[in-house]
Image (cartoon, rainbow, N blue to C red):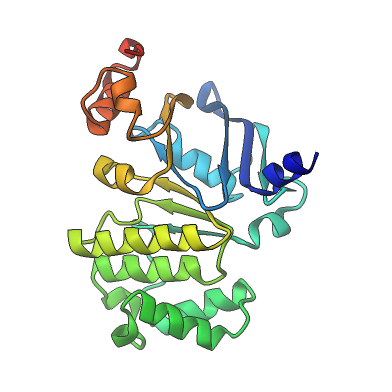
Length: 255
């Protein structure tokens, strides 16, 4: 019984039978998975596979047609505020308000999340993400890579237990992207955080993800270790497997 309780408390995110229907179109169809503490799970698939819809439901932006979402054991449908208070999100294509400075953005979001010792927390994040020189610069004047670093700093404000990252390094140069990947892995490994990470960069996925889920037409088609899955299906690498999932999913057979 004690082992069962410890396994349950290790689960940060539990998605069960998740379904989203728009008229006659099933965008997400009976999706179930878990994300555990200190684990980075890649949610992969071509455009239109259902990744963004799934993340939007986890964030409470969209209401599922059916199924359940539990964050830290709290049901999102019945205990929304508690479920989301230790959740955060960053996406390369969702910039913060451009008319506010970096510090102003972090302060406003920190207040929304009720972050304690906020000024100290902001100073720490500005240092960690090499943003100290941009403290008083409006976000709209930053480069896309700089804006991405601000978004990631915002996502870390409340030391989330569930961190959702949608293409987090898409606009970064290779050296900066490598540094950001290392910081997120360190953040996950040292704390109580589980990470759900979407990316089209398969090299990145192999480097950072402990496990991957391949979505195709709203369903989970494949799941497993990103370093082992390609050989399981007779592919040379994860990118080749991704292309097959995107173009010819019905041809996939285990080797």
